Length: 506
Ligand SMILES: *[C@@H]1O[C@H](CO)[C@@H](O)[C@H](O)[C@H]1NC(C)=O
Ligand SMILES: *[C@@H]1O[C@H](CO)[C@@H](O)[C@H](O)[C@H]1NC(C)=O
Image (cartoon, rainbow, N blue to C red; front, side, top):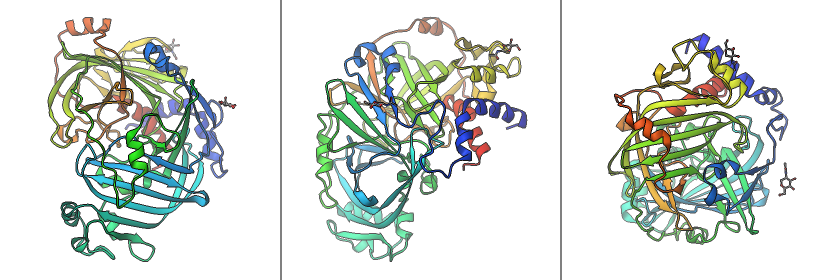
């Protein structure tokens, strides 16, 4: 990155994130919370979704609060079979006691419906909340200390698979001699961490926490625990310091009803792993208009909502990504609208029930939503990033004539390899899962980089809605070719990498 470009980016970041500067200087103070536009306990209303998906969400008007520091006590459980990069399939039941002790139960499975348990881990330790995160607004940083990790194998086949991955003699446990159903120590204060490292084991997720409480208009309360994200690159996993979240666990006493999976996971133990009922297969049908269910947090300081429209008859799609400064998605910075074609591929061989796709982005439009972003874009060289010197707040600019915007990391056309799946939620409404973005901010622009896990699911607003922009777009003959650079990389470059490099966080 040239120094000129960097200084442009930094200018933007400095203007955009004044609170980060303030907090960086006063970091030692416990519970010092970013000041200015950021509140420690924010009452969030999901007004954004309602704008775009009115009829569905008005009924479930919810009020969300997130306290810093969060109250962790209680048991928190998975609400579905979770998929981690790899892919790995698991369910989790984490219990936090008073006096900082925790017990995290993780059940691993051989397949994507969590019907065939392979092994369970019981992780015991202590957690200490440190301070409000000044990287991921709304989160709390914590440190943990492990006291023991135990393993129970659930089948001979699971034992053989694990034995092939681990050193022959793992501490007190020689996996090849282990008896299914019997607990073994994988780690304790006496023994080393060799086995844990070989398994790619990490509870780095405990380093970043957020608890959201939703109060529903009809009186119910739902509590969700967000823990740090898992790096999409296996090799980076144990070193990773999370800045985003995994899908939340729900409090066993305050979850969305009905949740048959919650009850099964809650009642499980390391010797009796939950066997989830097979979910009905949901055929993929993308037609319609899909939106985020909440303000989503991405690794590297990104808060956004997504809004996708697919028209399968023409194989065209549009994605609108609204970016914000804050974890409540209340202060917009810019909106990115991408258009292109897509092709449905084969069912995934790694993840049964999921389908491979290829997406092509041929047109990108950006709207600066605040003064500092408009200024940042206005500083680009003529012919490089839309109409030079013509960026104004709230006025959309087409980046297609300039083939993208190098300063924002957008180069058109652009191709991405995707993985989608569909499920039903507790109300039997369709959920769309799209592939997780690579944690390092790169783009899945090669088949080998195709995701093996998913982002937060989106909900269907309306079927078959076709937007006016589609007709103009699909009438245009666009030459599609391979390309590089990502959409969300844009935001990473502007707000992520620059911020990290400058503050020396990583
Ligand atoms: C958030 O809502 C609660 C009640 O639901 C209220 O007591 C509290 O003062 C509100 N906090 C803010 C920051 O508005
Ligand atoms: C962009 O640049 C033009 C020309 O220098 C200027 O008139 C305009 O005010 C600038 N816009 C912003 C948002 O800074």
